[in-house]
Image (cartoon, rainbow, N blue to C red; front, side):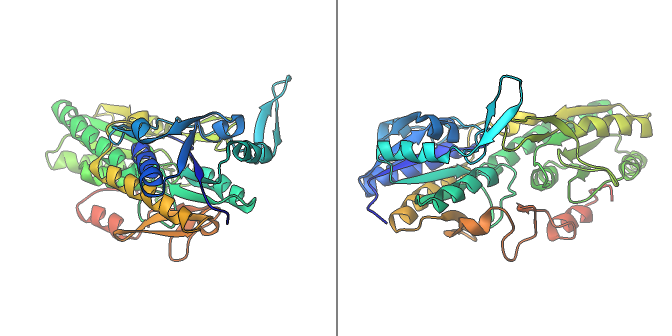
Length: 375
């Protein structure tokens, strides 16, 4: 591998808190420790395709650690290996335009790339490495569903938002003897729902890994009524499924690499519960994008920074084609080939996702304190 004198950085997929901490770690390590240049491509792979970037230096990244989102902006619609172009008739055609990105980097003297993103973004990172580009991946998703790492940055901040929201919702649920249904993100895994629900004292939690029967939830509400607790809080993951049913798709975005957008299952649960327990008012709240924003938690700041510094070190040591990861209390690394497109040895995996174990300790602990999963 030729000497690296200039690296590019991009953030892809949905935004989350901690991205700026990673950018800070990458930039300062590259400048202070290795005396190399850094540029940041804007709006993910879109910026790489259109050669739209900014120069990153100590001044540019100063004071951004606490900020949610990403100073580089982001996009989840640009897979350069299957790039969507809208035709005059409204349909789309798809082409591999990755060579355009490779040429853009060659012209700018970019020797390597650090890609911060989830499974879709990292799949393209792997594919660029297959084309001969030294690439390091950094795992990012609030859903915590990426295999091969114990946790992803952004997850902790989202859990804090969910917990604080449930604390507030409890007061109005109690005051009006209501059943409050709160929908959270998570895609096809229930990590946000189960950890947020436990910490926020939910009475029922519906997750994708455990198909639910709403009659069981109605029974839980009546059980609480009999105990003199005339209110309940139900946390619903956006990917939760009724027994024998499927996920609730909010919309399909044809020109996106992740075209199926989940959401709205909480409203479905609310309407059906209202029929089952007419003696209660059942109200619905969707936390939606509140879970992505906000001041970055202390844990995510430190984790993001450590990911950023480790990514540069790994790159300079010739470790292209790797992803940094959090294992135990250490930052280690793993081949991108092992991360994307499938599971990782020793992990519960389905379609490349890290799932909540329906019989695992987290679920057992929740059930032990009386939380219902509708099963």
